[in-house]
Length: 496
Image (cartoon, rainbow, N blue to C red; front, top):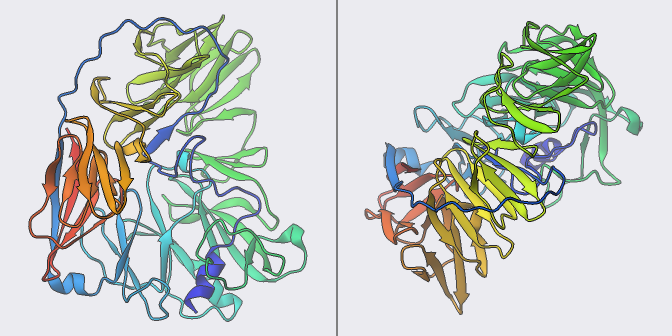
């Protein structure tokens, strides 16, 4: 039964991709990754002096669990901000049940679900929170049983009732939900498909096989804030659907949260603001349709909004940043820039360039790619030889990592292998001399776990090592350390 439910949830919405990452790296919604988006230009010479960061890696105790709480946990699943768990020896066990570790109060909630997994996203770059698809159904023998999936937050709040066959998160405001009606042979009306049971049927990106069972039905958009279906936004055939803030995009049409058609939209931004043509001008409107400012669209172009509700404008060959009143708040850039943290990045023929708001070059040279780890405010810069430089939120250097045989460079981890020994890079000594007998598991920025401790690779000191026998991690700073008596502690690794 469990595998049948899992196979059903492996169904894809044929009208929209299930992309969960950005152009150059993983599927971590807390990580911002930018691709090469602008034309090649001659890079300016960087003459700045690198300053050393004073930030330190620390560990914070979030909660302690007694042995009784931990005994029912057979294993863990993770999101970037939370843990969920299953009972028994495997999540595929017929009798396994699922529960969450509440991401707000860190309580081990009861295992009330027969199925629970992190939700898929239409575009993870447009999602800042995390969600679980769940079910309490013990059978998928008929359509009524298959329409039994809902959506909860990582705190256990029910956002979508358990009455849908498939759910896809569009952004932090909306999810696309599908109610199936029955089987169909008409591929033009397929909203959900289920492959025959296979060993990898839990894979949410499983492609539709030739012998898949096809289902038709009805798709709708569910408002996670109002906890209700959006009126007038639905259909029975596969359709391209997206969301930007409170704006819903269906094909080439735009709708507001009331399900009303919004006409004249030129572009909808991540924060829900949208631009509308008004004669020779363009108006930037807020989510309620109120005009914030206007600009002459014959000479000015407004680009995507940044996370701080500023925008990139171009006028007469120059680029600059404006706030929500249209006021210019930066110097002129010679490049189209993307914003990460407090800085701006542009691509040139030699790689990425990093600027402050005064268009002053903060870091130049051979930056082949970069990532911004938002949760710890760290920039990870990778050069053409796959060496990394890490900067804190003030653009001061935390450390540098050489290319290695094995690497999790986005988190400052690299190691070399010789016979059965693993040697992790030690930033303080500049050597691969942190020894482990198993492949090191990344716990978060600059931290690994081995058999006996969670280790800070910046200086080869133990962050957590108080008589624990095992460690579980979400790889993004959360660590559960368990003792021989089965009691455990939950830690958060931070950089400050």
